[in-house]
Image (tube, rainbow, N blue to C red; front, side, top):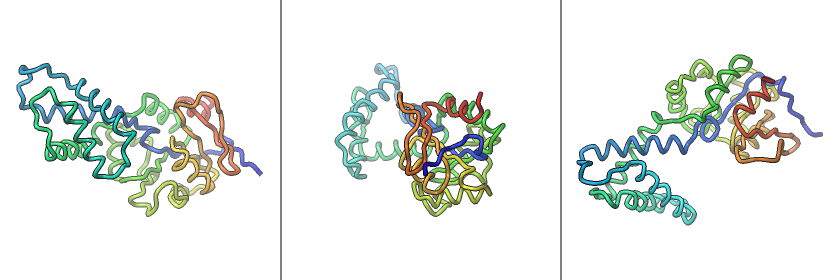
Length: 251
């Protein structure tokens, strides 16, 4: 028997973070430019045609070409980063050696939280839904890191700490149903009263459905399907967080 989701039964809406609420591309770009300016601050920019945006664009272009060929092994990734940074900075007087690359990306990792950029409709959706639903997060990663991101974006009034479920403290990672069950227990609800919203079919949707929760798949590139089947559950598909808000609130 197929299980149909009724939006009116949802008491708590759990969100994924990256690629759902947070735009990783815009976040990377913002952090890259900030660190780049820091690292090149001592160089006399009058000596050349200094253009940080062009450096970023070149890096991205080179990375796009190399990413298709990488086997995702750490050593290959680090070498690819170095080659892309070398190509992006080749017209400027920087020695892009292993130490420079390591230091550059270590600083990016340190600063990334401060440069988290939400999707344009994220804040408004959270604000609207918080008036009618409890809001939570289920994410792979560090709870402390995500807590600071939420605070910096002024989302703390929407998302209480006890509803921020992160894998580093949960003892399991998405798509393991265990992390979703923990979220349900923490919220003191029945599984069917929770709905998971995320962009990853495997991690967010399949994991949530296997735990007994409902789910909504956020697929910004989907143009035709309004739903997709996950086991015996009919999962709605939305193309934006604004559409999600409309489905849940009727507004």
